[in-house]
Image (cartoon, rainbow, N blue to C red):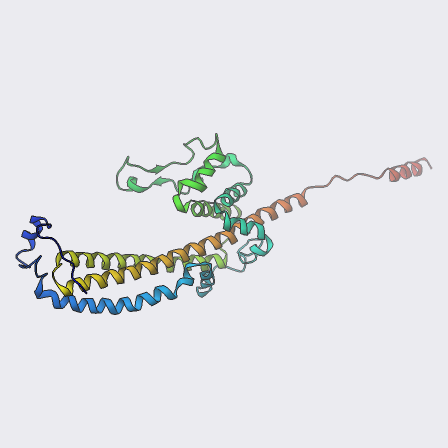
Length: 318
């Protein structure tokens, strides 16, 4: 690999002075004493990159809705049963409420506005920001009292305009995760108030997302560490052939790791959006079933037929 030249005098003096004792030929020979070690590292990184790049190309399907069946590779919680108290299972909900499921997948923000309204039983006067489930210090407030942001639901005037606040919640307040945050609040609220459990498929989805989320974070951290190390080596030893080769191969391995992490990130979001669509349809079906049962249980007024009244009157006269 062709070495990258650095113009003389472009390096800060304090850096040259601090490393001069360790590496006398810092900018001219590129730490020639360690150049062979850098070359060995470059060979290892090249072999690693040759493995990671085909993997990043092969797992493209994991970054699409095709990743959803992977949730069945994970076991459900032992305390769950077929429906866990729901009127229909999570997997059966799309068949019972296909329009609601498709709407929740394609328009998650609008769908979560409707899901929250149903979770509240149509009574928007009960609405508070995230229903109080995210109250407390966040961001800098966790480390410094008085710093932003501390959430106190019910103190922002939600009762005056609950529909507008709910729109802000499902669109903006949680950033890119706004519909997911809003959905989790509605799901937990409906479970608690109606005594419902965790659906087995829901438990599998949570385990799947947790597992691949950990893989995503590990790939990101590895990519950052390898990329930064390669950049430092390339900048600190511009005159060494082995160091420059090591820097190039480190960048290559880092890009492959980032590609894998990006694929996993897209797959996680695909699984979550599909799961939210299924569970939103399940919640809407649950709400409609309860309303139907209430209507059917109302006492019906019984009216006596006029002909029967006339016959009763004649019998009385006789």
